[in-house]
Length: 313
Figure 1: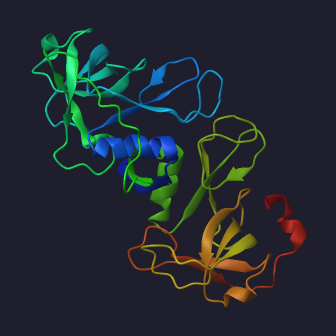
Figure 2: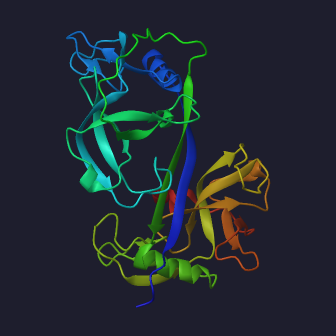
Figure 3: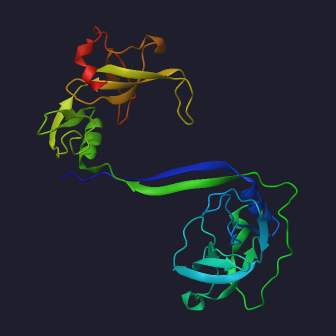
């Protein structure tokens, strides 16, 4: 059996969101070394604060300051910190109930080892040297053997409040296309398109997934299809994608390759965008060293009859 392909992939993007009045006050407070919670109708103080009562769902705006000291309610040791975590050396993830709060805040606890951490231990906030109005303004918690710090009673009113944040979202993972798609990709490197036929309904699926989506049975019989095909549906792209060197407008289409029972997608070239149509007969265009067709172009054949591809729309 040939080796199954795999490759490391990263999905990363900045996520921008606006803040409501409660979250704005909380993050602005961290910038000013003030921790604010919100008081519910039954008198509980929630930290971190929320804008709606978790019991009654009522809008809550009663901000109250709590102390920068607190008590560990539970914890877990992190032996190997990952990229972007609060500390680069081993630390504890801890839920800390700050003095004056009725709920716990999750953050890093800097301790020399797991033996130095226990439920009920007293801790305090270590503030970041530079603060911008983010949860990272709390650099971490640290062990503390002093008395309870008293808040000054801040009202939650600030000059230049934080109104929005940008959070970096990133996912690192290893992708494997599996046996069926590995064979499909390897065939493309030889400028061939290979699908798999369902042993039950006899339909040929391209790209293959290793199982028939209709019958739910495994597929293994390889069938070469194309290279020519028929445009079934299409769209005109008018917005240029970042890092994609294709001038707009251009056409992206579903193409039913001859012998296939599932349409794949590809770009249409070699024809003005406003002349692309359903039923247009096309063929692949390969560039030197490419592992897949760069685009599809008209073959010059008469358009396919609608009845020959209507089931593939």
